[in-house]
Image 1 (spheres, rainbow over the protein chains, first blue to last red):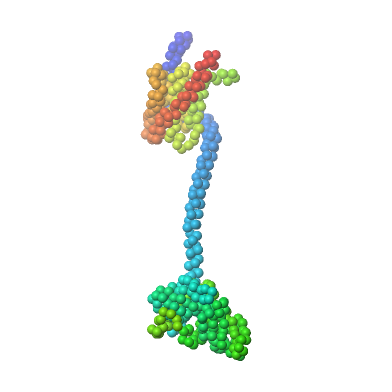
Image 2: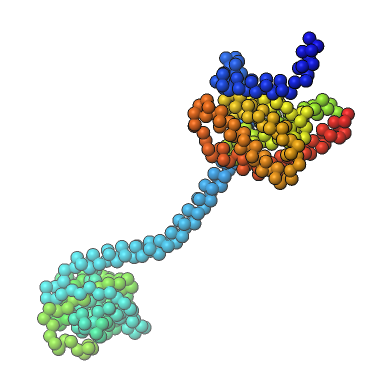
Length: 287
Length: 168
């Protein structure tokens, strides 16, 4: 017995190496890498333990990961927000422009629906300037002789007459409005066919001159061009009678007419050009 | 000190701790590729400087623990760890004389040796299915982290196993 102990003591290192290697190899190769007591659930218990520890340890890691995800998400949102703001700033003028074009489209459609007098052809023009002053009510159109514009050509909008051309250059023309002091338009009251002259007063209303004292005119009557004088075609709306007063000389009555057109809002217009315009009409200024 | 009875078991405890940290501490995807072999570093150090506290039995138990925790075939790490411990014991005197910087390469070589043994065993038993990136990443990661771990082990060694506690 003692001899055995001596041998064990002397070769204990070699024996321990042998035993440990044998155990490891046995487990690996003979037992197929399983614990002999697997049926008792040893591995499951260890798995349960290590799984619990790992989930505990992974909690801060997953929290940090979520935090990182959240940060990157916020960063992405911030970036997108800036992009969208820049896009919005870029598109804002376009929105205004779109609205402008929509209104212009509406106006131009109204212009197109106007049916000019058969003796005239319509030329769509744009109002490019207002040359009104304290003593004149006029504006400038972007069409001139190159486009066939002639002096005295009537200018209309869908609501009615607004004036006539008094001067034409090669690419622009000056229009005197109905409200100008120098404007005189032969008109008639549509309902009673009473003729008169609508003259500008440099105010917002027209004056009906030479209206007979007993003329059948009432407030609200529509006044249209009479076609006499050879400048304005017949039947263009001019305005509505808003007041009636006895004349100063007692022979005539005076009526105030509210123009059909809002002269402050004119942007496009139709120039009515006579189809058989005489060369004499092509003088650069009105008489 | 109340826990003074644990002092002789410090090498085993550090290996236990190393196994736990190595297999469970950082469950990140990158960790599986660059997972350093902390257990091997501990076995290396203790086998070199306290061979009386780190023999084949401790290597067997440490390897089995790693196998159990990691889900590897039981005995795979155990066998390679025993071989490594024997290798370190056999060439301990030579290794101790090497400069610390070169020790890192020795350590890296030992990791490769361990991987080689495990690979050979695995191929012997299951064929050639092996995740090569893991084999490549581990020696590098071990070499990089070894100075820090060895520094901690040296501190433990000097503080608890040499003076004055060890003498008592």
